[in-house]
Length: 265
Image (cartoon, rainbow, N blue to C red; front, side, top):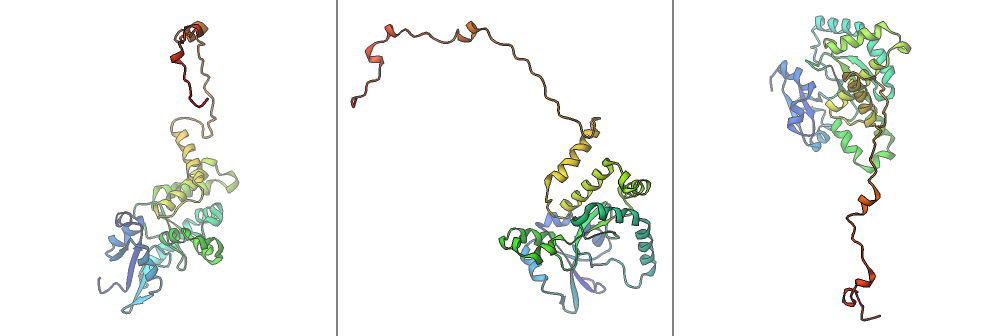
């Protein structure tokens, strides 16, 4: 690790291949940071209790408390603040729209070519630990765990075309007048970010429903295209034709050996 990197960074995930494809990793690699890849849940469990190692802080880049801006870089800070002000209509609306699904929606400087990503708070569980805890039966009775699971941060890329377009839509229309298609896009983008960040989706229909509507539009159909039952006509076969393959049996033609006789009768 480089001498000027004062923090030991790591990123947890289900496998090395999955971690390497993570949108949040690209910017760190691009800027020359070294990041530990942790593909075993026990790794992250151990690092949660290790805040410092050899005078260097230990932090997960899957948490929202890690900054890519140097403390002395005032120009970068001002640029980020300007972008936050520019996107305030969208971040405020999106937080209200998603409700309890996220703790906050903020402008990010950690993404390269992806529109958005989901991180967790400093003290919340990562996607990996969330899966581990969901697998444990005691979670349902532990309110502190459920609280930590819910603290997600949606970080958006202000330079991405999708975010620019969504900002324009929100600024042009008040919340109550925003068209349903735009709301479907916003919900779909959030669920895509959840999956891309390693999280699961509570209600699969929240993902498949809007997706199906958008596919309808892509095929030139109405968003809420009704399902119309196809009328199928079946030609009825004549009774003689239906019975022509059946063989008529005359009881008088049966022989005694053709009958099954049980000795115990």
